[in-house]
Image (cartoon, rainbow, N blue to C red):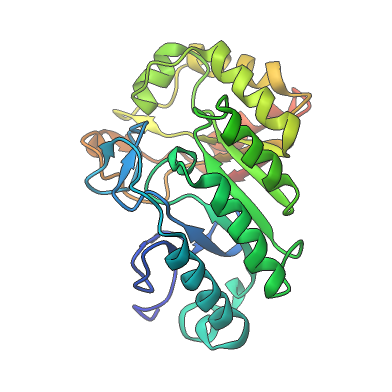
Length: 281
């Protein structure tokens, strides 16, 4: 494979040398995803042990240069639609533009300009004829959804053929602390998830992995299933995935991938709750 081709195991934010915009091949989206990275300083309010962001720090992003973001998004969409970007950098089977995704190197909703960025993306997509034709996804830890401005922006997102992928890696306070390095009340997180799902189609996204060679124990699995059960009537489904890229956190050496069979077995238990599950080993 050419060294300048995108793969699902390398989400290099600097692939095209832009500040805010970067392309990836997404396993879960099923093709090319245009990422928008608002956390260019590698700052996040969580610190997930599997995070592949180098030099991750606690905090929020600097002010977003909206004019630069708009120029980058317009230029990159032009190259994807009318240039030879796909032919040069994407394997033939992945040459489908699937979405624009707010993800990047930290929690995107922590940017105070996040509502303005949603409006900017809407305008650009309308101008290039893609509004409503591709998904606009927010990949979030959900921790700030209880802020009125963030919830209103999520509601706006729904009008852009949008959806939310809301992080739930555990079902107990101890589990969230161990995996995401945050002190989190599960009931509060449930309420944020319900509020999010009420205004925009929302999927739970869950990363499962082995820690020190051991998969999650039955107690942790039951807590997770109880969490999902609480919101099964309001969520659109669950994206269950394993490790695809090497963690850049101190715990990296303690983490390992679970088998596709293990993930499918857990997916089966989630499906028994009446919830649609997508598995990406």
